[in-house]
Image (cartoon, rainbow, N blue to C red):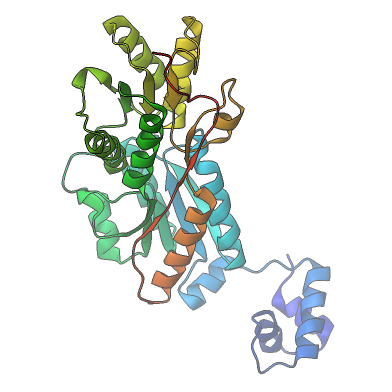
Length: 336
């Protein structure tokens, strides 16, 4: 292993000079810094991050906690966070909760034990007003940014999210504008604030059009392909006949659409269907999906810059980013 002492001997300078040069200290000339850095690179020197952390009281590590990378909505968010963190000199430790509170407790405590400088968390939503692990994060004063809507148990943290209600409202308005009046809705996880906001956007658009929510057209889904499949089968079994379906997410919409197509129901000729999120599969599904495009990359960048601001002690505030309607072939005027 190459040590600072080895570089100093080769360069003919003191160990302190090498240390200062590698840290970009101003009291070492630019020429000397460049010469020492090239020697260190040629010799294969790798800084001891643990030693640096003890000296600076930082680890240059961020913790990133999400439900699972199998959900494609997180791909661009993770990419943006890692990319911006890299530019700022941080590495990112990724952990999955699988939407289980006990696993969330475990992975967060592991990250805290690694003395991360900050946390990005997509919370595991629950109905309880308090969650001990979040109280511990507050007590430790760990800079933290939520990726999504805060709930009562995590209300003390800043967040970056999208305009869920407005986006869902615009999606329902799109269907209403095509002439649909019987619009079924496939809801999200009951404890998730973002799912409630999306449903509220749907409700407001209907009410503005002089329509009330028909409980027979509302089906509990979730946030997976399987949830969409189950909701579609329930809808078919109950014999309701909407002219359009609005799903809480693209995965739910695709799961539902696939079930309908297997039953010989044509999209959009027999029924329109729209999603939310604009994952890659939405564009390339066999019936390209009308959906809401979430600014996933911008959300990740905004979250990283917010966390950096918290670390620097700057004044920050939670942010809501606008989302855009993307019209594709899965929605059209009703045939009756």
